[in-house]
Image (cartoon, rainbow over all chains, first blue to last red; front, side):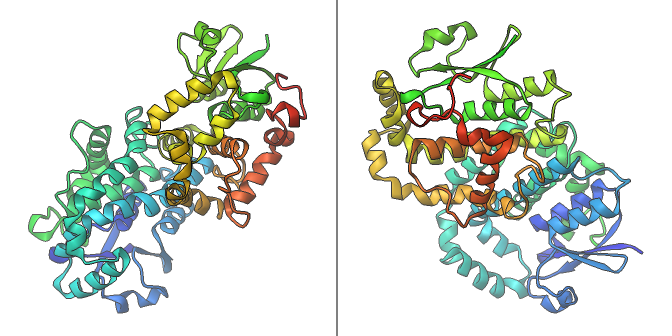
Length: 238
Length: 238
């Protein structure tokens, strides 16, 4: 039975949720095919079967797994003979720290910079919902946060420093080969690059060379999948 | 031939350099005895043999190793049959990221809060040097930074969030057993607890229970070693 992943979709069928990209790259790392089911922000009824209201959601052989970290752990446990997503139990727990650090520091530092750009790219049906929920989170109108972007750039640069340092010393965050910690951060980079023109990754920075390596992985998976349909090189749900 | 570690010493023979504590705990993890040689901030002549001016410095069998990360890698490579400091190559590289993150985000967030307290604890001979170099780094007088402490607490709490989250889920940052990533963060916690009364670790927080576990490790090593001589339970250079 095929694996299914429910993920957020924006206008023009674009897929750029940072959390869904973690799961997409984890599936590609394991060499697993999946069907990707698009779900708009307000499509809560479509995922009610999962007992909660967030994506990504994985369904494999009747099992429903919510939350990108749980999905990674599920894939590691149920497909142990395929390439490891973690590379051992200590590495898995350190990846968990990186997961928390990305969710609570890097992604919020970026969200202030991206929020308005994402708003412009969400499906028109979702716009009112997106504006209301995100303005509540940010504490002010999206347009105002957008106008203040320059003020937020130093915090972002600072959050990127340890990544730049680590990637200046080794090809991947996980060492010589990519693993789930790399996919966590790549989710964030895909989100940024696809939702915005924001020049987060300067061409001379270690993060830039790493992103190129990440885009090349698994047959160019992150370069070619989930693009807006008008630029798409694939059938998006394949 | 015995292993020797040169480390910063403050007044009353107190040892609380966060970087030396990484090496101390790495040695204890490997079950290696060492002689700890105190070095004041201005004792540059004493460590000139190393070709640079920073501690910790390890000497083992005639080899001189500078920098706490290089010391950890040296110990792992030269004592492979003793307990691993990393638990695999992916975990080692993720620990390297945590090393960079601690050096560039957590420690600077704390240093603003601790600088004046450390100043009061450095050897009187080192005070002028400490004040001059640290005021240059902070951009203003130590007393002014100290008076502004409340302003810096939110950034510190924010830097601690992913640690609290990870340690709420597992006994150590590295999983079920401690490893070098734990020693990196514990160096910071020792520095804080010994240089200051600052209540960084609230008693109900996961970080507090973790610190208790860390203090108990290796026969209570971090609880009993390197204390000021007037409180000391050991001969400090033993």
